[in-house]
Amino acid sequence: MNITKLRKIWFTISSTLVLISIFSILIFGFNFGLDFTGGARWQISFYNEKNLADENTEKDIKNINKTDLEKFFSSQKILTQQPQIQSAEKNSFLITIQDLPDKDIQGISKKLKKEIGEFNEISYQKVDSQIGTSFKKKAIQAIIVALAGIIIFVAFSFRKIPKVINPWRFGTVAIIALFHDILIVLGIFVFLGYFTNLELDLSFITALLATLGFSVNDTIVILDRVRENIRYQKASETFEHTIENSIKQTLFRSINTSISTFLPLLALLFFGADTIFYFVLALTIGILIGTYSSIFLAAPLLVSWKNWADNK
Figure (tube, one colour):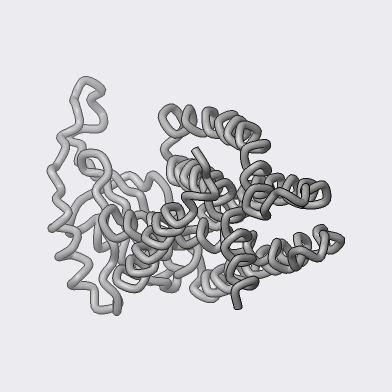
């Protein structure tokens, strides 16, 4: 298969995925987690014991519905935002409410026990809204700094490339590939967030930055081979032929590297703890998309760019 010759197909696939991702982001929006919005989150399990003194008496479990909790929280005038309530196991719920002073949250907890029933507090997490806003800004800054650093590094690394192609093009196509990867991963998680209440948190940002690192590493390997082959390009060879040879020379290395990383992630995805499932899922999707963009997008873009520049 001639990868470079079929570049219009790869560009169409990538453009379609990116456009779908952009529309998903615009339509559904980001479902930011507690790390970015601030607030309090309870994981609670309701129960009602008949006789604690009698060890042979089993717990009489009350059937608590999600609707019961929604009605309760709707009646709390202190809340200006409707809490998010997710059902876990039987009579277990994950409740996320807005950022409130501790005394107000304790008051809601007492009312909840009185009106709905006694419950075990499995976990409790509280993030100040100002801290959440700060986390959001720093996460965006981290991504921007990473992208800026990558384009400068790539352009500097390829500064001595032959004049047949501008070294800044190498940095630019690498960044285009990275934006491609980020947008697709974001689009998938925005889609999941809308239909499954999946939240974007700090672990997702970590996975996104790890995806950037993996993707640019794969892209640089291919572009570096392009640089070496350009130096020894024969007069009879076209630039497109040189790019195609460079991709084929690094193809198995890229695929093998991706597979060796993908297999452990796949094991964690199916057998790992539930708490890291979406983090591992983001890494897995990012690596697959990053491998695709390095092979089928970055280097072929150089060919299209040079052809366009030559025909101006």
